[in-house]
Amino acid sequence: MKPLGPIPAGYETLDGVLAVDGTPVTALVEAAGGTPLFVYSAALLRARVAALRAALPQRLALHYAIKANPYAPLLELMAGLVDGFDIASGGELAMVTAAGIAPGRVSFAGPGKRDAELEAAIAAGVTLNLESEGEAARALTIADRLGQTPRLAIRVNPDFDLKGSGMKMGGGAKPFGVDAARVPALARRVIDAGAQWRGFHIFAGSQALDAEAVAETQAQTLALAARLARESGAPLPHLNLGGGFGIPYFPGDTPLDLGHIGAALEQQFAALPDELADTQFCVELGRYLVGEAGIYLTQVIDRKESHGEIFLVTDGGLHHQLAASGNFGTVVRRNYPVAVATRFGAAVEEEASVVGCLCTPLDRLAEKGGFPRAEPGDLIAVFCAGAYGASASPALFLGQGPAREMLV
Image (cartoon, rainbow, N blue to C red):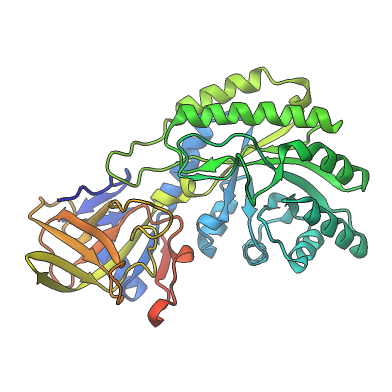
């Protein structure tokens, strides 16, 4: 029997059924019109933001990276909870605009920005995090044609990465950002061109559960930003410290120690060099804000046995939950937190694999986990589904189509 990942705090059971914010998931499925269904908890989202505000320095702004989950009602809720938003495409720019989010609260990072995306961002007044000298030249040319002053920052490719990071975004050759050694010259060029200088974006990695590693990376980021500002010869108005805060997905994972990160950063802020004395700081978080606030519900369609193994075949699968299937960046497949939602908290009775409805052996939501006995009609819940679920999975694969979504 293979262990399952840890179920996040904040969920409860009502009469043996998983409940979200006091409502049984059976009622949520009925209200949504069926499964598969993503459910996002507004209460858990608010609680996560409150926990961050309490643990981190007041000087540090919170930004939401909407790539984690761009669901429109969720974006509208987050607009009242966080200070800024980070986007990575023209499509995401349209999403934040539709959600009524002011462009001045938005920054745009990502390699390969098309001219049309640069133009839309400049026209809207969004901050562009420049990924290369070539992108800077195109942005300045477009701004000159539009007769607008662009808001420009530089994404820095640091010489270090985030230790223990599940996905390294800095250090060595990377398609992201400008190598640190070339940043001062580009900063002077941008400033001399008359752009509104917005500082640096330094993102070294993501999905780290080691608080000391996060704190060390933040200290390195502050030191690098101060040095680059000094070499650029201009005050640094803003510094995006990146993110990297991870959530527990797999057996043995433990929650990130926010208190340690906050205390370490408070000490750093108390001894800032002159170059950063008046700098505005933010941290950019996606999965940490929304990941544990979402669940994916799918119904058991068939229960079958093959060579002595039990398979619970559901109407969902990797086309909605690519990450839970183990096909989104993991090297060794491990089980997410998964439960029989209609027998939530019941004792383990059998070993079973939860599989989806797709014609591929890759479509497994849980492999040989311990569950109470489940029958057709029961609901399976996949936790940690609030980030990189619906929008990061191949919903059109085999013509299955997207899942339903709801915010409660």
